[in-house]
Image (cartoon, rainbow, N blue to C red; front, side, top):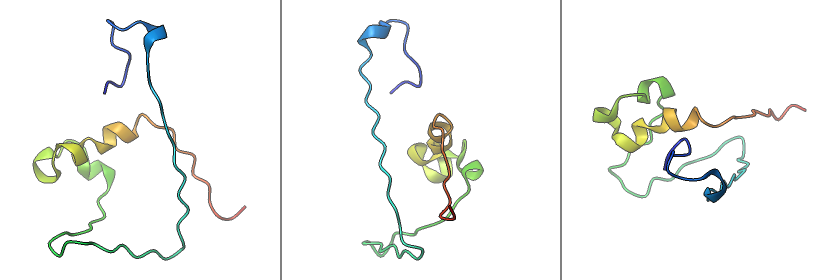
Length: 78
């Protein structure tokens, strides 16, 4: 809920669990949208930032959430 430990919570009482899932996709993936009125749109993260009136508050908070995570990009060319 918080990106930091709130001052009223002791450090030894922090209950946080992080689960990381690694999903390997095929080179070509097809997304099936179940509802006909749903669109799948590719949007850069900088367009999502602070744009809650267009994308909604949850989607607009993705850049802030992702900025707290360290990503290691591993290409398929080893």
